Image (cartoon, rainbow, N blue to C red; front, top):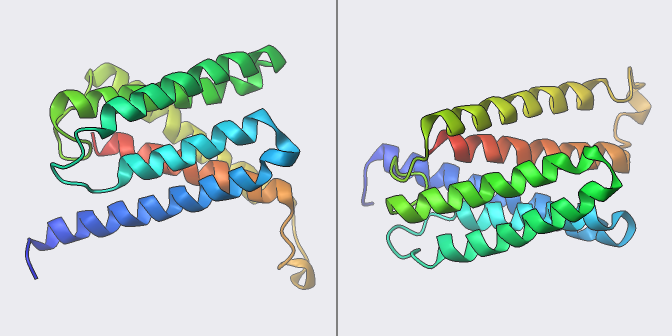
Length: 180
């Protein structure tokens, strides 16, 4: 086996993040038919985050420009969704965060290697935003249904799955920002 234990640990955590994002993206893609534009945007975010988290080493020079273009388009879609209300602003923040991380990865030689970190103030503000989003999302998920009888504990509603999906992607964004 080659590499250090910390290198192996980083690779395993990267692949776990990829798996989490793929599952979240697939679930959101499945919801597109009923939920429309917001679910489509979340599916793009999930799959894009998965692609960004794949540990490619030095072979991923194509990735930052491609992801930058995809997430610029997603930001445009999020702006379009804002016509329906300010509750879609998170999609815009998420898309622009992904553009920022893709640009930082392209400028510094790769995401998650301590290179390519953007301006500390912007990175710190985004970390605070996503930390708050994750804590608030977790609290909403825990308190969503109140106490559940043991017999009904296995029943999970679609709303709870959507919240869990959003929470997972928020944690993924937080993890990716922390690795910058």
